[in-house]
Length: 499
Ligand code: AHR
Image (cartoon, rainbow, N blue to C red; front, side, top):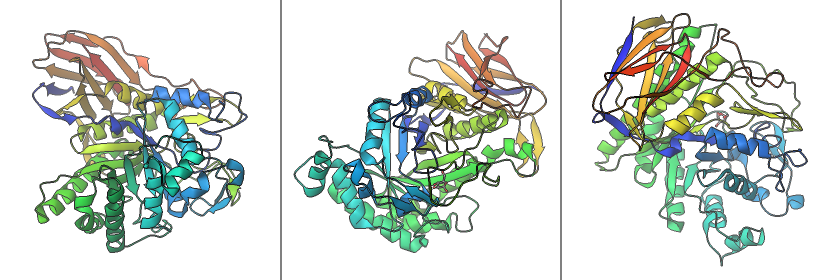
């Protein structure tokens, strides 16, 4: 009952794009307001940004932040969020039935990013729901043009002398979804996205553009949506988006633990669809993927926080994550890494309070959810080249996905030649011994074996007990004669670092 695989420096998947460790800030619930921005909070700085949250986001290691939505963007007027705060209009946010005060907008977002440090890059979405080409062009001119035009001079008058230099742009959000304001057919969206892409490239040919793929693999339009949209946009975009959320349903934990099987198939099907369109167009170009929304999200659970329509910053989507959720979450990260050859960008949805690794209390503390740890560890140690990992593993039966290997794993070789193995044991009750044969690395030492697991699968971090769940060191992991021997605790996320 031992799982095993072999690593060889010559057998690789591809380089990790650092942007695999992105996240997402949407004007939704308390992600922005009382999440990252809370003037008057004891930890707020001169810009009203919570420094306790900034510190946690830095520790998380986020490299890209997508903004401002999400469903929100499809009814958003970006102009509402710039200029003197006291003159900004209050608007209905029809996506989340909230009131948007616009106290936070593009300038504040860029200040937040600057304070995060040089590693964090913005990813802006334009509204292709209720708006179109002209407004997207205006936003790019406002954000990126140096000076001497109406919109660039407006940015300067608003206090931002230097252009923001935003390279990465999403052409709308989930335009296939019936819930999306201004939903479109694939034909309508494909044409609009292509025209918008061409117009934005007329301003700056070097922008990186993302076309909307499907909002979920299980939608009836999946794959034909991508094929139709890409037939129009293939040569003028760089990436196509994927969104996926997972939750445990009907108490079927075994299937939930195998969620990555679904995610993996989704990625491979989107890659196949992209390449099919490329082949039809006889194009040498290869598109890459932007997995710009992924997470565990309990969409079927009722909101435990009562709220009224058109409230400002209500408590929405404030999922509290358990150890079980963190193990599944880790497995989703492993899936992204295993496809690093085609995934250029990925964004954990979202960053603070809203299905988030970081939680805050208004006027109170900020803390790490269980999912914080796998993300931070992967962002820190999962940089370099992904090795080709082909696990041989005992399997278990799941209702949704049939036979699934108990071991889910990947490995990344860093610049210094060190190797980090990321591994999940899906067995809820039993430990899983793991042997890894290392060929030709010259590694001799186990630097660390860290695991996230708990006797209580429902354990979580809360305001009352924010430090209940943290990763712990695992003793007894050995590297001898080119073989790593470890034991993966029941239902666990593991990081084994070798030097
Ligand atoms: O992340 C929450 C929501 O999920 C986003 O607003 C939307 O794009 C998706 O449906």
